[in-house]
Length: 163
Image (cartoon, rainbow, N blue to C red):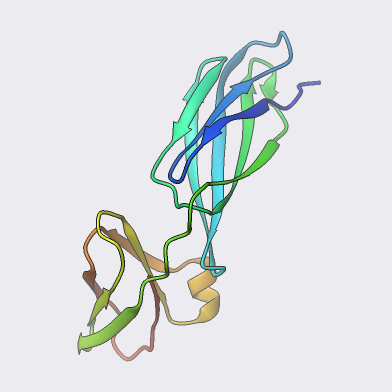
């Protein structure tokens, strides 16, 4: 039986998490697959995937959000197959940024100008869909470090926007 890898949180800050991965077995490990999950504004779960080569690993994941719960899951790729998943949870330190104030204005039938307020030097995600279900499951999205973006939409549809 292949055991799950051990995920150990080495440190965390407002915008990063460092963790180590190791196996407690003599089975040869060729690498790991790590998923980092977090929920954006209780509407959209997001994920970042890392594919890591090698047996032992210390990783640092940066560009995270302060005071946000993250779930890290990992499995090992071994000579005998994939291991079971292991999980850890961590909340980054600091104070969570205030949610931006979004304004959306139709430019024409297929373009919407979105603008918002918020801190500088951060990356914003803009999510949009024609229903709450689509906004949660599979929204259209863009990202920018600016405070505005023009998105193209389908004509004759109503859209929900989230930044």
